[in-house]
Image 1 (cartoon, rainbow, N blue to C red):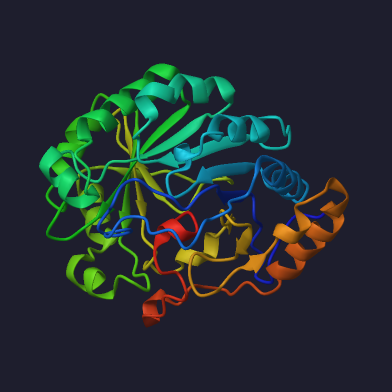
Image 2: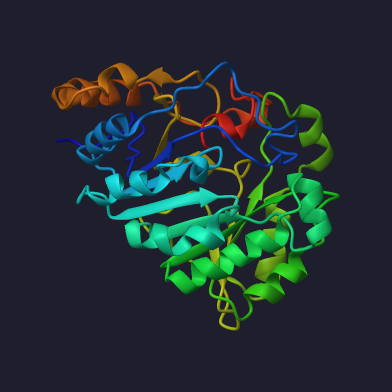
Length: 326
């Protein structure tokens, strides 16, 4: 089966599969008013997820990240991990979580097949953490980080969205943390969404500013692996941890794009921004629909644009990142 490839020669090894858009945090850059359901949502069930994973595995997908919302809010989250694990063509199973349930379930998820985990920790100051997330859960999340390290995950990453005037003074504290802790710290440049124009103007901080500070301090750029995400990763001989920078406004950011997204309701998104998505759910009902589903995937890749249009202030239809898994 031929691999998914667009008209610009980019191949797609990596699927970000959302399983819910529900979240129990109220992060100021994503869901400042909390999750607001639109009617009674019906997210992909286990059979639909199995058919989706099967189709993508046949067209070159090697890595699947289970996302949300907060994916662990699904009672069958561990079963979802097992479904992905049971597909022998998927080499890497990852998830992104706010860490709310991590301390209790880290070992269970690892045993089910999860191997990489990203945990959102936007500040190491508990008061600032509360201000950004709307939840006084800093200690719970940090216990979750410890549990993930103890469970044996091959890669534990910490995600922190860069926010001018909020957590932009936290870099020394983060660096102190990873001096002797084997985690990957990732700073994510704030992206403008449909609901966040004023917030973006007030708090956007260019990731390149952090990059210059790192280079001046002796951090070295690491060559990316084929299934890596969009981060530019850096390491330092004096630190056990690494640092990654995700800079969507950097030149040629989209040139290395290798990931696609499917929303919790079964829509394929070729880009985090700019388009409404294409429904796949009608072809996720039975195994005998696989050929037609794969044909639809190939057809949609021909429509993928060369770049997003964030530089032009065009944020597309994405109202908040929780809606299609960030």
